[in-house]
Image 1 (cartoon, rainbow, N blue to C red):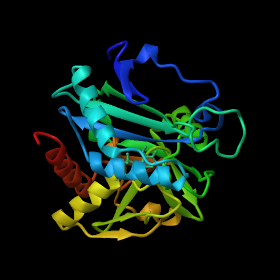
Image 2: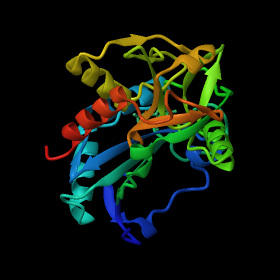
Image 3: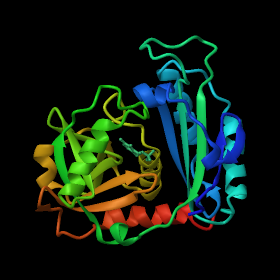
Amino acid sequence: MESNPTVFFNGGFMKKEDVCISPDDRGFLFGDGVYEVIKIYEGEPFELDTHLVRLARSLAEVGMKEIDSRQLEKACRSLIEKNDLAGRDASCYIQITRGAAVRKHPFPEKETPLTVYMAVTAHKEDGRKKEQGVKVILRPDIRWNRCDIKSVSLLPNVLACQEARDEEAEEILFVRDGAVTEGSHTNFCAVFDNVLHTHPEGPNILPSVTRDVVLRLCSRLGIETRLYPVLESRLEKADEMMILGTHTEITPVVLWDGKQVGNGKPGPVTRKLQEAFTALTRNR
Ligand SMILES: Cc1ncc(COP(=O)(O)O)c(C=O)c1O
């Protein structure tokens, strides 16, 4: 990775080292901000509009000012060029906070400018997890009731993911009211009798862009889907499980809480979706 990449900060381009963020920034003080992560395949952002629409929604849901999506798109494409990432795989991170102001809980004055930061960095894949599958553990969903907002307040997700790593698992699956909602940084799907089940959109999950893509692929490939919470009590009957995300893509789950999924190997529905996903993202 370039040690001092060019980034976009509050309307201009500069070296990352020169970015100066106030200790009064509400992102730092309160986690009062939203973000997006966009995968860039061979120099081309994937589902950029879908990510920017979700970002606009997150901003609106937390009462922050609108941001010009076209300016963000231009900045993303400029950063790919400026950091010599044309034709390469990379990751774009965008964070917007409610700006810097004296530390008080209510929103600051309307004129307070938002803090806008974007970085594009090279991203190298380790394909082993997608090939072999991963292990997950289940834990109670201790998060708030607005998981549909892509907020930077991620402490419960950070603690949960660390717990998973401490147990040598890739991900935690959160369970609320007896059903799996999603992972700490991924969406969750399970296959029963060739039907793909995943939690419906709503306040308990992030409207995952990858989930959206997978549902579209299912419809194209004739794979039946059911948008219904997957009950923890039914997991033993699942033929396949997978976690989805911008960087996770479609990763098979082969072990949950020490129990094998199906025959312990990634299943045919997962493989079919992975293949279609690769065709969609590569050689566009
Ligand atoms: C909590 C949570 N759920 C799901 C996802 C997957 O979303 P996407 O497919 O848009 O990356 C993420 C990604 O960061 C996440 O943090």
